[in-house]
Image 1 (cartoon, rainbow, N blue to C red):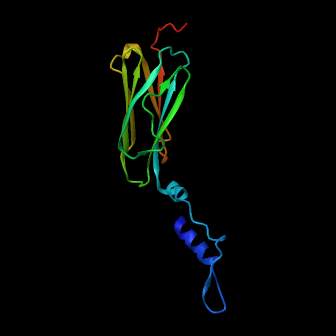
Image 2: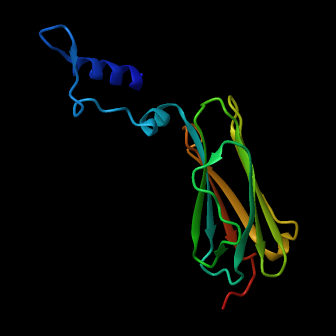
Image 3: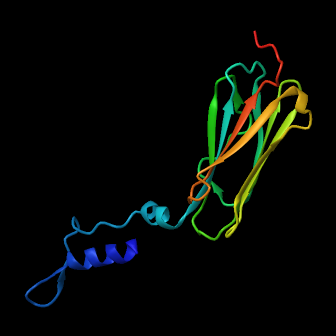
Length: 167
C-alpha cells in the first residue's frame, strides 16, 4: 500500500515540458524508506533479560542461535550481565509468514547453564521457555506480553532462589 502511495506521489510531482517531455525535479521525488514498508508487514519477537538487583552471580551470554528470522542486533557472545542489568534481543522477519525462533544460552560463574528457547510460527502462538537444570541455584520466571500484536515480548527474570541470603 505504501509503495502505491509513493508511486502516485512521485507521478504527481512530475510535470511536462511544452514539447511533451517529462521534467522531473529531483528534490520532489522521495523514495519510500524500506523500513517504512517493512514496519507494515514485518513481525518481531523480543527477548528481554532482567537480572534481579540482588543477584550476586554474574551471568554471561555464551551462544545465540536462530532457527528462523534475523537478529535486529546480533547478540555478542561473552557479554556479561550483573545485578540490576537489563538487555533486549529482537528477532525480526520481513515476511509476515516467516517463522521466528531460536535459543540463547547463558552461563553462571558456578557452571550452570540457562537455555532460553523461543518460537513463533505463522498462525500459532508465541512460546518462550527458560530452563536451568540445577533449579536450586537460580530462580527463573518467564512472561509473555503483547502476544496479539506483531511484536510480542518474552521477558526472562533471573532471581535468587527463595530463602537465599543476598547481604
